[in-house]
Length: 325
Image (cartoon, one colour):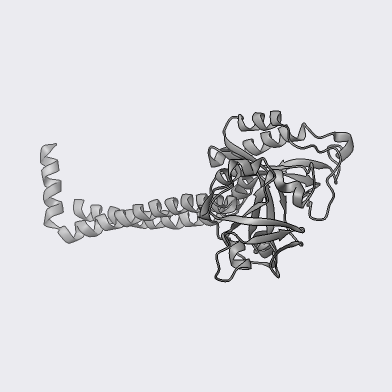
């Protein structure tokens, strides 16, 4: 046995160029397989993260009418949908795989919000104290809302960086006054997303999906929402899951708890095309669908790499045959 090993090593060392070329064929083939498989896995994860957005594992549970989100910008609050009670809030925040949860109201488009003579064209949010941490925002200028401002109907507003760019030129927004439906709100801070998602725009539909709120976002305390808009308006829930794979289950469970508070006879029965209910968009399911669509391309790449490895193997067999002969 030792003699065979000695002869093998002697043969390798006595034909250095042939040995290096033989090893190179195997190395390139195996490296190609590893690189392509790693690329496929990385691409699939990137598809998942890009579709979900900033990657902070948040699930948005909204009020829907049929297949579309219920828009309070032009629709009255539906009968039978109540404000989320403290008991339901506690049940949601204590759910398995829920790291935190926030409850908020929103307007996708604001037509009576101005800074001086400039109209705001973004979205308005009435938030609670947990919203910024759950959604992944951090204070860039000024400050966040004080604890008392969440409870005493304070006329304070926070802008995101996009809203600042759309409303202000070079001056600082801190301390300025925003007119929201005839009510003066003082700007106390500017926030920005910790991890920002930059979507790829390929069509007009993509533009309105991702850039429909290009004017930015404004945030006011949830208790101050009735000052500018309506009393007892239903809320949405933003729940943060412990990981990406837990998001579908978290969204489903949160929607179930919130739907249990709705009076079915007022908003339509299950299966009605205009039924009003809380639902979560299953982004993870969409990501898996995109991954499935790319599987044919991935399979082709693996076959190409396998052929490279096979060709390299045939070359090695030929060299071994010559050496043995």
